[in-house]
Amino acid sequence: MTVTNELAERISRISVSATMRVAAEAEKLKAEGVDVVDFGAGEPDFPTPDNIKRAAIRAIEQDFTKYTASGGTLELREAICERHRLDFGTRYTPAECVVSVGGKHVIFNLMQVLLNEGDEVVIPVPYWVTYKDVVQYAGGRCVFAPTDEQEGFAVTAALIERHLTPRTRIVIVNSPANPSGAVVDPEEFARIFHLTSRRGIWLLTDECYCHFLYAGKPFSVASLPGASASVVVAGSLSKTYAMTGWRIGFGLAPAPVAAAIVKLQSQSTSNPTSIAQKAGVEALRGPQDSVARMLEEYRRRRDFVVQRLRSIPGIGCAEPKGAFYAYPNIGSVLRNGRIRTTVEFAEQLLERARVAVVPGEAFGTSEHVRISYATSMRELERGLDRLHRFVVEAAG
Image (cartoon, rainbow, N blue to C red; front, side):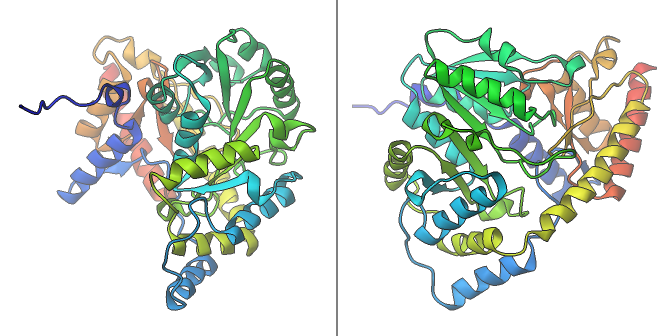
């Protein structure tokens, strides 16, 4: 009997993350000594705060290096529930909390435990690259709901309702949003919740960037009365505390859903890293002043980036209301005929100008690129100078 080299069908449902692919190509060029300005990675350039690093060192010194419970230590789950209560007024218990290997892992697990073959998931466009792939991997069907750029990529209950069908199982809302920086107003979020709960649909709120909001107070739809029955929260320590490499994410959900994720993790990853969990406890219970400092710096960078992008001939840019991404429209550049797609634009920008951006096709749009301003002002200045020259040359 000969073993075939065919892979399982389900792996063909997903592609390599576009953001990871851009990051890998930029790193490859840097390793070769090429001077690349990297606007691709969605990663804070700030160091993890010292108190969090010291907590990890203490964990190692105290030999906290063994297995923990698959869904995270009780101490960390309690700390997550406490922080969410302090920030948003929710009342989750450790039984309704599960710790995973990053926020992406939480969303992957939620799709695995909530979706049956053919179930539909409504995803506003533009969307984070991973949503589409993890839905398809779980056997679900993506229903894309395009937002209006002229309205700041706003996600509304009316938009969501137009895309609901009897097969709708989940609606995903990411606010502040990656890649657009759009923010859902609390009153509009409440209307979305009442719509989904009335129809027996899960509402997944991706709160990865919830503390990086440039106006108003952070809000969680999970804080609304009755929300805990049909709202599932995907959260992460990665962005809030500059802990991307530590890989700590969490889910807040009804206890049966949380238990199902724990069961899945027990047969896949088992527990998140013990040392990172101790660091996570300190992040959540320790001083929170680093978050405000990062937000203020992101605000300064946002204002600079938007102003510079709007000064480039033919480029428009909606103002991000949160997160740390700009999503400029390069449609005028594409329509001149020399560069046809955002993929080609990103490829040529990297090859000719040595600037890395993520093409809009990865996020479901055809006339945008994503620029991360989670980098220094010096790099922003250098990269935007190069981008300006590249666009002018492409138009000439």
